[in-house]
Length: 325
Image 1 (tube, rainbow, N blue to C red):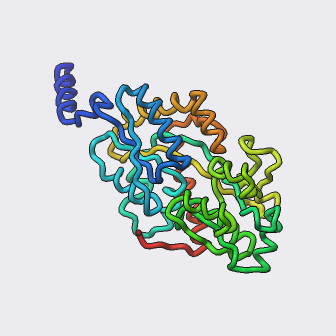
Image 2: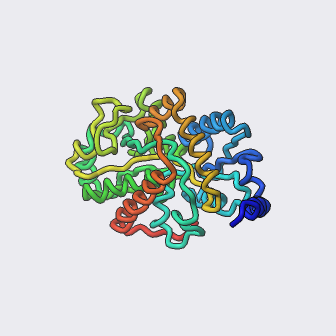
Image 3: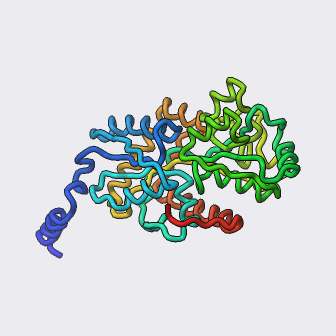
């Protein structure tokens, strides 16, 4: 092809491309959050939005669309066509791929991985202070004596807090009573009040109630002890002999699969820079993350595929299937 022909082809390609793909961003960027305001994901999303606003030169706003274990927010992002809408998601995205047989999207094919925001960090297992147990082993003994009576709270059916309880029940051979709530905040309130007896959550979310003595931490859920948590807090596996027990929480950014690769790369670079800043590092450490991950979109995509496969095994073993809410 002659140089003039190449030039004409490039001009025609530019005319056919969406305006936002030529010079991105051309308007505010929206981070859709599948969680209610006030939680740890909301805190991190808003701090990240502040950093991205400064680096991208356009406002980055956080739009909370809670409900249906993240399906509402995920579908909103998949259906967006403005090229300026992304999803801040969590392990729930990987869980939903197997939990709901008929999702309105494909959890992998319909999304473009952008960046991991908070690298996998352990949850912690907490019990109400009035429960007469001081270790996971003692909790299991009590659950075996009183099957189906110990209620554990979660932020809703199918989220990672629910799956953590299912894993404990499966591996320990006990029957716990799952009590789902519409969000983590009311679940935490009832844990503090003793209406439910235990809960898996982030150390950050539980910290105020630990400090005032309303709840007690028993263990962490990582494969090994996290440096972000007290060195004296054992893992579930080592305290109860549950070899292989491991469940972690993480946050990441996904975009519609239609977003051009150049835009994904630009947004990834902006995220990596933002996540490396000291105040972001501090917030991530409080969440139990080991620090700002420096992952390419391809690496984050590979991680997400592995999570989908891992949770599929847990869900199949537990016999969990839900209709789309």
